[in-house]
Amino acid sequence: MKLTIGRHKDNDLVLNDNTVSGKHAEVKISENFKDFTLVDLQSANGSKVNGRKIASKKITEKDSFQFGNSKVAGPVLFKTLNNHIKQARTDFSAEFTTLLGIESQYKSKRRNLNKNYRLLAMLPRLLITIGIVVVIYLIPNLGTELRYPLMIGATLVGSTISTLGISERKKEELLDKLKTRFQLEFVCPKCGSEFYGKEGFFWKEKKTCRNKNCNATWHVN
Image (tube, rainbow, N blue to C red):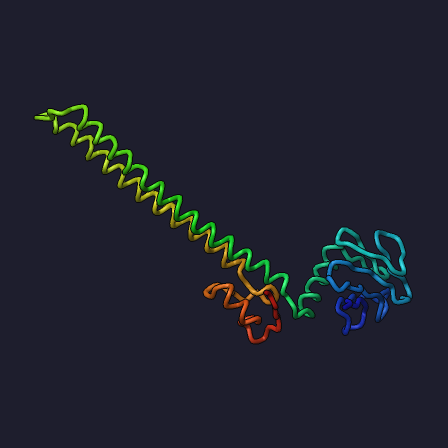
């Protein structure tokens, strides 16, 4: 795979500059999409990497580039490269495997959140129960004095109910945030179509995106 650079409109990166040749240079892309080599195509005014003229050179996003008099920043060239790779590729098995991991983490965090808040809700009730037992044990003859402990107990119960309500609302807020982040991440690695609403196993077996215009595929054991 390669990305072409030049003045002609049929290039992948078009530079509208008379000092740039029609077919000025190209970036060769390795099969694993991790290594990139810039090759000058015997252009009239040459290609430079970090200010030095080159015929062929491995490049990274940290480099700066010049084609004729046109300067191109590393992030700009590599954004074009990444978009070109994504459009040309069809096999996204590695990225889909990552999505399955994201789904697994989401489910685990959701379970833990529900579990922790359930324990938090039980704790106040347990403490109140223990407190009432202790009071009954220490004051065997309640008599007219029963009124005050009951008032205190009622206050504690009311406070507990309020606390539990707050804990439940906080839990729902955290669950909503967790769900939103997952929805934003659980998407087609090529076109960005949402996968949320169906389990990862469904998409694993389907092997294709829900978007009919997207040709992404994956094959995961």
